[in-house]
Image (cartoon, rainbow, N blue to C red):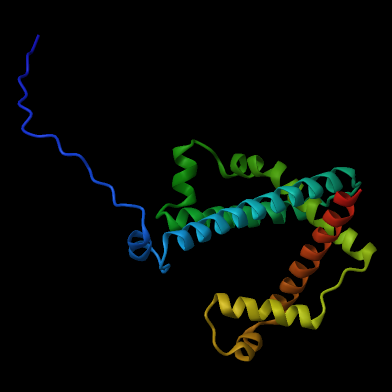
Length: 198
């Protein structure tokens, strides 16, 4: 049995800064604590609204997809699995890892790994096909104005000053992908509107 003797020389109490206007100026671009509080409250409310909107959208998509009777070609599921594997490889790469090392660590073959993705891949394809079918039936389209607006927002996100140059740098495949994204978003909004009003 060991006995230790400890001499306590001093106990320091951590001093927290006063929550006042000076604090607000030090930690933000706001002049007053009240303005800082308002901004924090606004951001929290926006985040909660954003989360609630996504939860509603997910629920509506899930319900519509469950009701749909769509035959899913196996080739589409395999392509979706390919895409998911590529995405996962990219995530690992950002962490300095490789898929082979990941599979070795978890003692899995590539076939087992792909089998583990099949259920989610099937649901993703089912959702995609369902939303595409709804958009066709409802005649949802993406106008050139909507495409331009989306491209302008993308250019701003990438901090590109010359929006026209940014638009011209896009290939036809990329533009079609953006158009499809707009159509899917509008279709989801349409479904949410119809199903939440009932």
